[in-house]
Length: 286
Length: 183
Image 1 (cartoon, rainbow over the protein chains, first blue to last red):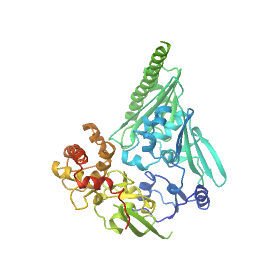
Image 2: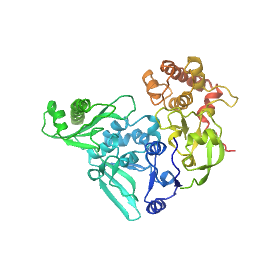
Image 3: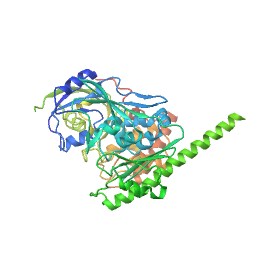
Image 4: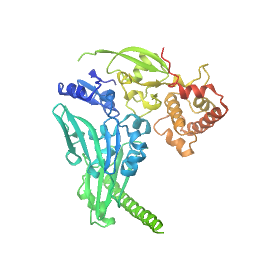
């Protein structure tokens, strides 16, 4: 099928884009379009106006500091994945991005767009939430920062107002001595996962985020739980549902398996990096 | 809602085209219907099958997941742009012919564009990397074995032609965006 008719503007600056959005409650922002265009073609969405932000300069920046990684609204998944600096400061970004659809989709799709599309089956929303990141949004009324914890309010629903554009997303750096890991199970390479999990281990703290389990990206605190009990403990904070792809029982089993797998991998990352650090400090002592 | 028409200058295979299209015209449809470049095939029309893959500024993208109005600043290469100036087959096309990498041919344009860009990024892929390169493209005829062989053969042809300086097809295929003098 083809999209229903819509009006279209391609502003050359952010203020122009915000003005266009402010005047039209049924407008949508077009960035990469890799989720939006299929929804339009299947007529699951029919906005009256598309505001194409691809012509706005300066929105594609990937800014990496010691504190974290900031991604502009037009930073494509492929560019973020290729950034060695971003990978070094927050390795979970690349670990998860490798699982986002196929390379061809990653060439066009944007990470910030995926985050505010708020699909609970997507990788990057739960990564933002697990890491305690945030999104900066702008409208004609000004700018504000939305913490990841306040971003996801329902299935495919974020807390952005209709006239707001997500300008950037911020992912805090991995603290020294902490570890992360990501894994997911999909029926085919590049498909949406039946279940996915991302782990953050920092000292005694263990937190795991899940995609494709609840109807919003969900993070569970598993601090103090023995590894072999973590899957069961995680399920107390989750409500795996059955659908055409997997039964609820199978999805729960994937939660058990993936939880152990990602926590173990994140802990291995901690011990590997601490071994490397002590080895290098020994070398320096000599 | 009216289907207001937009004037768009699209650069395809090094040639500029002026088209007048509604905003909802998919890039895949603009290529096929407005420009008559029917080499780009439309399969699923929601980004899953990969048949409609074209190169946008040299990177493979789904033309069914872009609007023609969004392609205004882009250099697009379709399967028609992979042949040599004399009409000879480009190296990836040659490899598909040699390895029997197609049967019905419906999915082939998407494979050819994807692999052309993939070999530019990674000229000497391992067997696994060849498989990974085409993971986003579906073929219902071949079982993929001969397509993977074709990727490996294409890598040989590209590296041979680039070391000997022969093979007009490969340079045109790879560089059709760089020699993009607009008409």
